Structures are given as C-alpha cells and as structure tokens.
Length: 461
Image 1 (cartoon, rainbow, N blue to C red):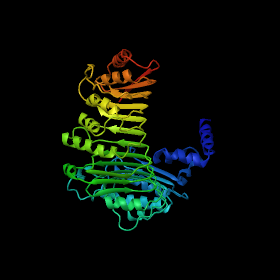
Image 2: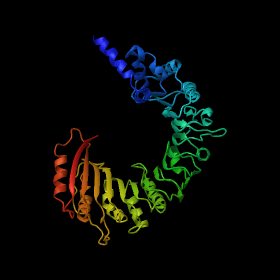
Image 3: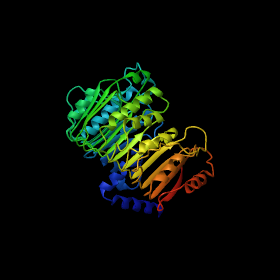
Image 4: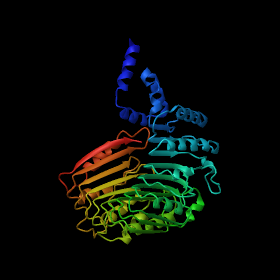
C-alpha cells in the first residue's frame, strides 16, 4: 500500500510541466537530481533529459576530486537531452592541473549542446598562487569558449583569461570574472566584442597597465581589485570608465593611482569600497585621495554607499567637498568602523537631500560604553538632515560608541519617521541585556520628530 502511494506520488510529480521540474532540478545538486530516478518508473531516465545541469560541490557532496570527477563524467555520459541551457560546475576542494582536461571536456560538452548560461569555478592550488608562481596550476579558459557566440550569461571564477584570436560573444548580456590574471588588454578586447553586455563584474589581481572600461551597453559595473602578495601594493595603474548608459557602479578593493570617469551621466547608484582593515596609514590616505577623484564625477547620483576604514578617509572627503557637495543624493550607506562616527557628521552635511541613511559597522575592541557627547562644529548648515525620514543601523554588541552619532541624528532629523536598529551578537554566549540596554539608550534620547518610531532586532552571526 505504501509502495503504491509512493509510486502515485511520483506520478503526480511527473504530471507537472517539464519546465517547472527542470527549474527545480537547477536548484538542486546533480546528485539529488539523479536520485529522482527512484521516484517511479516514469522518472527512471527523466533526469538524463534535463537542460539544466548543476554540478555544485560547495556543500562538500564529494570529499575528494576523483569522486567528483567520476560523477560528472558518468552523468554527462548518460545525458541524452536535446539542449543544455544552463551548466554549472563549482569545486570546493582544490583541483590539480591533471584534471583540467576533464574540465575542458565539460565546457566543450556544454558548448556543443547549446549552453546559454555557463557558471564555472575551478579552484586552483592556492599555496602556489603567490609571487613567483607560474600560473600552471590555474585553469585557463579553453579557446573554443571565446568563439562561442550563443552565450548570454558567463561566470568564470579562479580562472585565467588568455585570448589568442577573436572573441565572439555577440549575445552575451552578463559577464562575471574572478581571475588571477586578467590583463587590461584582454578586458578591453572582451568589452569591444560584447555589444549586448549589460552586467559586468570584474575581480582580479592588478598587474599594471590602464584598465579601460568602455561600453555603450553596460548598465551595471562592479570592479574589485585585490592582491596576491606584497609586491602588488606597488602596482600603480589607472582606471578609465566611459559608460554613458551605466546605472550602477561599484569600485572596491585597493585603490588605483588615478581615476578617469569621463561619462557616467546615467548613473543612479554608486558603491565606493575601501582597502581592507589593518593595511596601514599610507593606503588609507591613498584611498581618501582616490575617493575624492571619483566623487567629483558622481555628484548627480541619487544612491551612494561609502565603505571607509578610518577617520582620515572620511576627513579627507570632507576637506575636498564643502557643504552641499551632493545635492541629489537621497539614499546614503556608510559602511564604517567605530572611530568613523566622530567624523560622520561632517560627511552627512554634504547630503542636504538625504532621505534614507544606512549605517553598517562593528566595534573591533572590547566592550565599552562610550556615550560622552561629541564635540561638533558650530557651523552645521540649516539643511542638515532636514529631509531624513529613515535610519537603518546594523551594529555589534561589542561596543556602544555609535550612540553619540545616533543622538545627533535624532536631535536634528525633524522629519524622521523610523529608525531600525539591528544589533549583531558577537559574544558567545550572548549578553542577555544587550538589546535591553540599546532600547533604554535610544528611548532616553531627545527626538525632534514626534512621529519617529524605533524598531529593535537582535541578530546572531
């Protein structure tokens, strides 16, 4: 009886539209998709026709690469569908170069079967990915992929891009690259060969040269520059961006020597990142100057996020831009460490039309209760926080030095409607009175807006 029920249950599932079933398959690891063959006789070979193939090992379904390699090869040998629309391979364990030929075969398999979306993450042996390594342990994208003109979405992680010939990605709309080596001339060649590209994410190790992003089709751009060793600190390269239809821009990681944003007239959102914590005073001052260069070109943007790592960066921005430098910004996000709060008021004065303020940060040191009033400048402009309606704060229970800033915000934001405070619990076990203490402090502060509500939430990391 129970066996009959299971069979009927499987048959009911089989009556769902194939497009819905295949969408479910795409959200499952391929091991689970293969197991659907036991649901009923009608499902025995159904998975072999799936157009979405998801070999994602990030959940450690296979504890070593040989098992993963065998599974992928066997699954593709059994596949007998008409087309592969989506193909994903993500490794969790580091892959040796001896397995690269198999990865090439998988990419060729997907390409031969008409793949539209390809997501490839081939984790290299990271212990060799330091100054002096020759790159042989990093997977190189096979040449055949560059000539495949039917791709619409492509994601390449931990791969090297070396182009010998032409790129023919005429239909590509979304490209995400995380590469150890992606020379500026390679990026330039790709952009010149992707006339339909709308989304471009680039994470790479900068080895010098001028990175030039020129595109009339781009709508969303994200650039993250990182390092593999100490020598990369001294790479002084430039960044040039000319994207007249760009709407969203993110620039994160290590700063460039110079920035040239010649046409970002359609930009509505900008996220400007920072150097990691602990990289020294020199890089922090360098970042301050770099951000100042960028900000001069994005004063028309409505949504801005600033990720800063020390007071000197924020102070540097204030020195370069006096009051009302950003008359169009309605939403501002400050991603900061604790000490930035004493400089944040000066920064906020540059945004007279601000309606939404988001503050994300944490206390790195021990628990402190520092609620001594800050010494603010007497010449705060009349427009200060005049239009602010929503404040969202995400902080940790490691310190309460955020409260002097919150006190000023509540005091001056006369039209404030809501403040949302999310307190992350860092300590384990969590202090039982953390949320209560935050609630008492907020309720005891003077508020110029009589309609302001407070929403408190405690989250655990």
